[in-house]
Length: 182
Image (cartoon, rainbow, N blue to C red; front, side, top):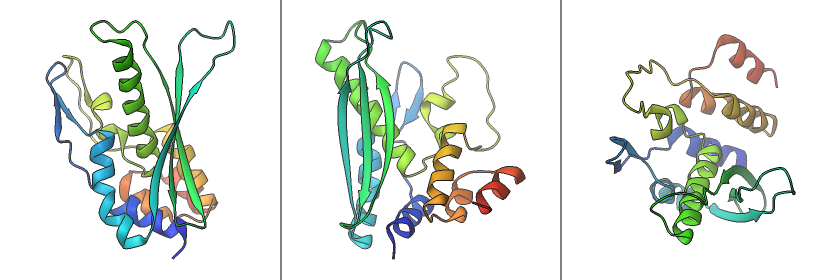
């Protein structure tokens, strides 16, 4: 089984409950730790590893004063690997947090989204997408976001299975046709 086939299996079968509750926003969410816990049975079964690397990026003068953490989640079978990246800003003015907590929160967020990108976790079901902040909102389907569609294209071009993407997302006919012809 190739690394693409192994990743496709995880993407199609991945399940992670939203076991954490945000009392301020009144919603459930999953953490990076929840995602990693849910992948452990696949790691042994498919003989793969998942690693997470982080890098604090130095911003160019004049571009932004916000520190940025680049997080890369990698799945490897020892010979080949596939990577997914997330970029997260560190809010250095976050009230009620000490500086290490601010960086820790950004780090956790980056890990969660890098893993979400790697495993094609549907962000329309994520707390950040479903938190209405007190406004009524209806989500009728899990559509693929632009960022996820870009990742899906890369995945298919590298030998990935379109059916794994279709198992996670409702694609338009045009999106499905595009991915099928890559």
